[in-house]
Amino acid sequence: MAGVFATALMPVAAPASAADERVVTTVSEADRAAALAHWTPERMRQWVGDDELPPAEKIGRVWAGPVPPGVGRLFFTAEPGVDGSCTATVVPSSSKDVALTAGHCVNGGLDRFDNPIKIVNVVFVPGYDHGEIPHGVFAARAFAWSGTYAGPMSGADDDAVIALDPVDGRHVADVAGTQEISFGTLPSTVDATILGYPVSRAAAGEALFSCARPADLRANSVTTTWNTDCDLAGGSSGGPWLRNFDPVSGKGTIFSVTSRGTMTEDGVTTDLSGAALTEPVRKLYERAGEL
Image 1 (cartoon, rainbow, N blue to C red):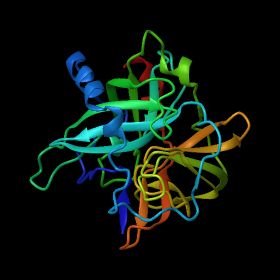
Image 2: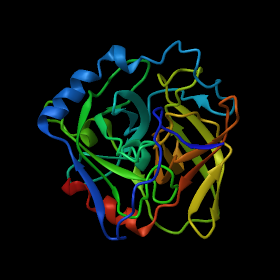
Image 3: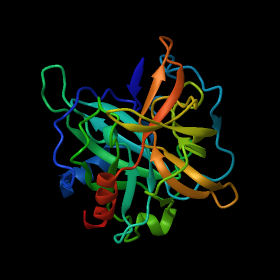
């Protein structure tokens, strides 16, 4: 079956807006403080030892060495109280406070009664590794997705930007570094390095995993996506797909982020897809420094 790849359930689509619009959620100062209080080190490690997690990856491997610049783990709560995690990456911005992730990591869609699922307690931990927090915990002050994103049941424009509060007066880009992002036309096959924090039995989200695989571009009447046989489990959503990746510097250029995966009945991931970065997403990114 196909599914979105956060670790909390993100059902049903929300209505789309016009292509040049964005949907912005602003987080109050009190709610940011509550998010930082919620995500204790113990809570971040809550999935360790859970026998119900999907089986360990066979293609994806634990990242050897320091976590690449800007990459980290994104934590959140889907009300009423289901914790989850995704992956996000710091990208260049005028504010030096912006991270890129998948839209469904911050857009909860609707529940079975058509009530909006609110995403709260959003924090980003760049460089996260087995409970180590080398750069601090950054609370989200705002997040946004393009008006063209129709919610978690849609794979089109499944991207979001997050504006993060500085920690001790220091911006996330300055302390954690960034990865470049491009919106240009690419060949139909790209050698990709895909990074993410899968919440599987391999490491329960505690370690960064990677796949170095070719990604193929596929288009239909609804969406254009990049596809690969990388098998990172849920929690890898929002993780960067990097081209021209240099393993020495740990830097490359983002051309997509993990959006969806196909899973067997046993929870084994057989492939991943990421939406091609479109003009509405480019506009969303270019305005992200204003959040």
